[in-house]
Structures are given as structure tokens and as C-alpha cells.
Image (cartoon, rainbow, N blue to C red; front, top):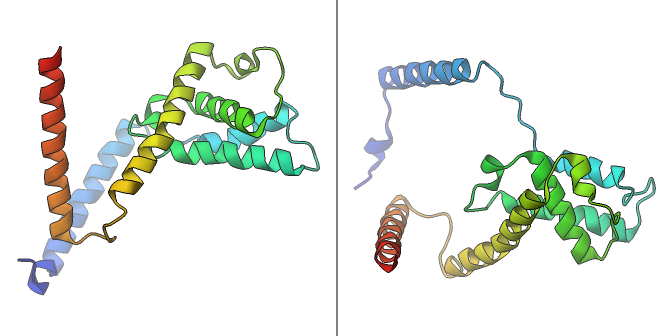
Length: 180
């Protein structure tokens, strides 16, 4: 079905596709007013940990574990089916990761509502804590689903997987609709 000739791209086709891509990129950049600064929560989280005084100048094994677990939660959030990085502020993600990591590492944080210092309210913190915890179960379930499959997928395998997921999504939507 997909022979070598299907991958051939003439020079004219290449230049035409490149021109379309550059025009599209220009539209996107103008729409964003060329403001493409991205703030990721990893650096914020480490700064917040230092501000809270739980990462001293000479870190201990416990503070290293806390920092590693905090960054682990932030990396895990990248896989979130809830699109946490898109729907939440970096400050809130950093605070939620610190909160969960400190509980796991048994590191005592200030007894005041310290998250308010970083402009995160309790409701957002609670939502993100639940969301981050659910990410672990989702990643584990996805890992088990893909355990017996080889990666990378071929084009045909990818097409079948997309078709299967489309059918599964449609089926679950219908079930949900008729249950309510």
C-alpha cells in the first residue's frame, strides 16, 4: 500500500508545502503578537522549594528526594489526559507538585497556608492534587495496554489504533449519554 514511490516528494511539491507552512507560521505568530514566552513550572517549583526553606544551600538526601519527586510530578502532568499544562497556570502546577511530593517525602512545610504566597487558592490546589494523583493510574493503565506491543508502530498499526480509539470514544460517549 505504501511503497517507496509514495514517500517521494518532488522539488516543486516541497517548495509549495514549505510556502504553505511558512504562511501558516506567520499567521500563528501574528495572532500571538509574537509573544511566545513559555513559562514551565519546573524552574518555579525549585525556586518555591528554596523560598519555603526546604532546600538548603547544601541539600540533604531528603531535600534532593523532595526536589526529584516534585519534578517527577511535573513531568507526569505532561501526560495528563486532562491537559493540565494547558488548563492551569504554571504557579499552580508547581505548588501542587510540591504539596504532593512533600507529603510523600514526609518533609514538613510551613503550617500556614503557604500556597497563597504563590497566588494559588485552596480550590485550585485541591483540584490539581487529585488530577496529578489520577495521572499515575492513567499512565500505569496505558503502560499495561502497550506492554505486549512493539514500538514504534507501523503506519498500518497506527491507523488501526486510531480507528480503535475512535470507536471506543464513540461507544463510551453513547453509554454516558444513555445513562443520564
